[in-house]
Length: 288
Picture (spheres, one colour):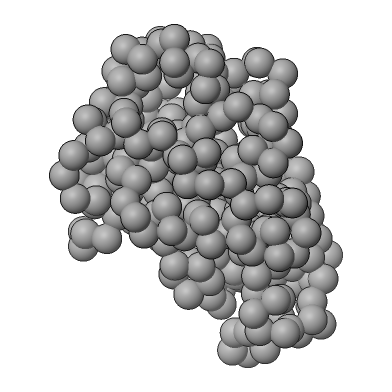
């Protein structure tokens, strides 16, 4: 099994890399990961759902079979003014066009009528560096990006729940052909994924140590703790709130011209596996 993953610390990939025997491949964005799916270079991926929506519009045969986290997009910067007025006339750095952070940021412009420049990057490190150097005024992205920006005088000006409630910051995406031929492998992987989501909620210190080990010391424990605790909504399930939020994102993507058609629910999601792995109520909204 070939698994694509992102650098985001709270993804279960950082716990599972030493447990699941697979070829693990790191990607800079979900959009880059969709290109790898197209080229048949990966079978499974950790991705935000907007790249999946974009890919489905291009004929990509992938489907989301599990969740992982919701509400993982924040806006932070050096400003004492209130949101959204603080963004007026500013430059906001975020990841590539079509990523969930970019789409949510575009929704801010659309919803509030605020004029600001969206600056897209292929790597989150580039967003952070340009923020540090003063080339952008705000960053919009993951808890990883925001926690590091906070170390450079940034403050969160708007949290993820306000930006887009229940936004599907990542889910488990699979190649449809691989999924149909490797049901047992998929089922086994999802059991481990669900176990890891539980660890992030219920065994915090153990999870932090595994993530720290995965990063090889590139991130200190204090930063990893901040990342994991900034938006602690971890679960593998696909409740209606997650699905409805995704479909609303798809509708907005069509409205701003990112996609031509809104995929149907059953084109984006296959619930058959996760209903077996996670039959109980969702854990995203449970207090820690």
